[in-house]
Amino acid sequence: MNPREATRDRRMEVVRLVRSGINRVEALAERLSTSTSTIRRDLSALERTGQLARTYGGATSLAPYQERALAERMSMNTRAKAAIGSVAASLVPPGATIFVDAGSTTAHLIDNLRGSSGLTVVTRGLEIALSLAEEDGIDVIVVGGHLSRNSHGTAGALASDALRRFTFDVSFLGADAVDPRDGVGEPTVEEALTKEQVAQRSSRTAVLADSSKLEARQVPAWATLPTGWTLITDARDKKIVKAFENAGVSVTSVTSQRS
Image (cartoon, rainbow, N blue to C red; front, top):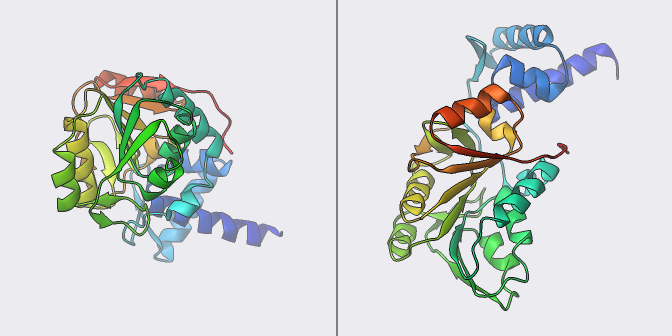
């Protein structure tokens, strides 16, 4: 690949990352294994062509937020997600009733629950439910509602009506973005409200998020979480982790190599 093609491909990836919510210069440089000066030149060039708008310290997309399809997300950051799922499973008490969100990271939690007995799993995720369907020791309850084509998760009025009938020992939430004060970022208000309700019905709430979700901000809706929620992540940036801890979030860090 010649230098011009490499630059073109890198800038296409910059646009994709910014549209997904990773829009800070330092974060883009880290993800693309290049220098911050190169990223700044890329952002300036992309602004001139009308693909992005520069902001202080980064850029913003000129296109609406686009949620990735579940199949695509299942192939991303798999080692980090596997490590997060393993640690999350250790929070499940014997005989518990838990909520497991739809998503690619929570799918790795499910991998660590196989063989359990006396466990009740309530979920809004179709893949989550199907993956546990053959587990004799786990009672699986699927929450109905409006189905997301991307996450394959339910939300809305029907989901809300079902969820108010449960209380959970632990809820495990996925996220498109995570913020110390705003909570969990979602592609729709329906999904944000569903996650807020789940957290309110839970004795403990754990958010499972690889480090890329801590860099993302460009999502349209946010779910506020109760004080003292837990974040399980592979993030290594001490400033980011400290920001969560300062906001009263309990951070559990996992060790992994990003795939």
